[in-house]
Length: 613
Image (cartoon, rainbow, N blue to C red; front, side, top):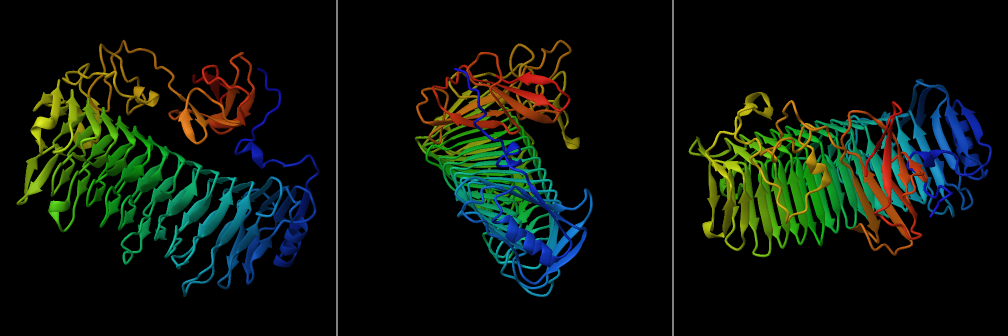
């Protein structure tokens, strides 16, 4: 098979001209001419660029763009000159930008670039978003913009989007002191069949009811990549308020990679990350969660409530000083799903509430019904609770299958009468069996000891971490954890697992080490490439037996110290590149695609190329 035509437009490449026509440029210096340019651009059948002269533009009425049904072209709004400042401010309670692409018959595009958007109203709650937009078959890109709200409440979000079969990139934007009393303070997005990406955005000191970002989506690919969330807070009078990233919906693929969450505060489950729904595929990978706090909820850093054959992996993250009522760092409720938690560090997370009897899991709390959960090669250090399970607390039914493998539990405890009492693990296993293989721990409390399957554990053995009080969880050369782990053959282990918390090889000696760090010897093997090829067919994850008309290939290169410029695809295994994209996926006509022959290469900005699979 030889594919001559590029059938897929990547998220970035798609924001060039939609059609082979000459673009029209508008240069405007006042609101009247800006509105005139928008009206003409909506009907002129051209790819348009509106250049705005630097300055402050105060609006009493919204800027409106309603393209007619034949206007399947692109519109770009940007400053007249690079690095110049264009500020749009509203003087009354109305939208700043209002657009509706839902009637356009073909594909269209909108780019908003390098615009400052804010409020000059500071004395009352408003109802209207800065930007409200409906899109169908739309490529939408918002980049290099700044949104500032002065903490004045908006019942809607700063940006309110309803999208269908569309693509969104939010990149290099700043959202500062925005506030929403009902939705996500920065963005609220509803829709289905979309691709949504947040890349290198900065969310600082926002106040929300349903998160800084709130998504209510279905059958959507969501990417949260290299963003920073700092000191976002909630409405304390609203008991279900969240302040970070919130997703609700089914049949989604969610990739949360290399983000930083610090000091987010909320009242509900999952202050920093909250995922709720069925048939979802979620990957939470190489993020950092520090000092996030939930006053009344569970899992201040990550809360996951999944069902109906969902899959969740939590890999290579660092969780420190997070606090909630149950599951200081992570709380997972899983029904008929699969969970893999590996190569993470949980350091000094804790639970706290007015009712210690309801506190479980200073580091992690798991509630499992009919699920497979594997917790492998994590390091738990000085996590604590006023209830049960300083490091980890598990509750399961008889149809669940839970394995703890190669984990370090060190100096975790619960507090009783102001005294610290060692308790690394608490298991409510009256109805189900929990397997513990080759772990390091000192104290394990089980409701039903006869339902424990224990093998190869190192009990009351110092793991000899290098300097845990200074957050250095590497193994000393004399550590008993070196080469003391196992690799069971009866569980699914993600390919990304075979790098440790430092992105070093997961196995360098005779066997895998215990804990999140793999001790590196001088004669360690050369680092191997690890990637993933996922074939998505009919909203399911598969690697063979493709028969649908469309097939989506996702190739993830998570870890890298170099920035990736593009992805190259050899679909038929003939050694020739058939497609190039700037995002790690491609959607093509099936035409008998054989996933065993597909290869993905990444090309870095320095020109080097690496084959992933």
